[in-house]
Structure formats: C-alpha cells, structure tokens
Length: 76
Figure 1 (cartoon, rainbow, N blue to C red):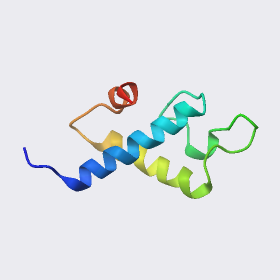
Figure 2: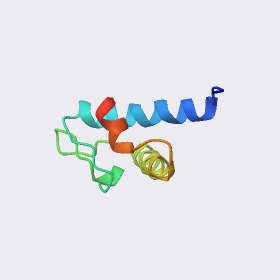
Figure 3: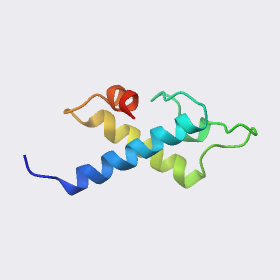
C-alpha cells in the first residue's frame, strides 16, 4: 500500500481537531458545528477560520469509506 501524503496530512489535521475538542474538556460530536463549541471561559473554542476548517474536516471524514470517524475519534 503506497503512502498517500494528502490522506496522511488530512488524517493528522482531523486528529488535531478532535484532540483540541478533548483538550477543552468537550466531547466530539459530528452534529456540533465548529462555532458552537464553547471554551471554559464562555467564549468560542475555535476562531471563525478554525471552526470552518473543523466543519470541512468533519464532512470530509464522513465522506471517506475506509474508516469510521467515530473510531478515529476514540483512537485519538
């Protein structure tokens, strides 16, 4: 199996967003939009750009056939 650099980078970005959600003490849920995550102080957990990227990555993760995004979230 050849290494697909684009897929590897996408997976790392996806894992980083899930890790950030967990670091904030929140649970990952794909129906929660990026701009709906709230940090401990009550402000937004993500910048508008990060929220848009997060939503794009969630959509991309669910569009893939080779792995279940929930399993990826548990593994992170």
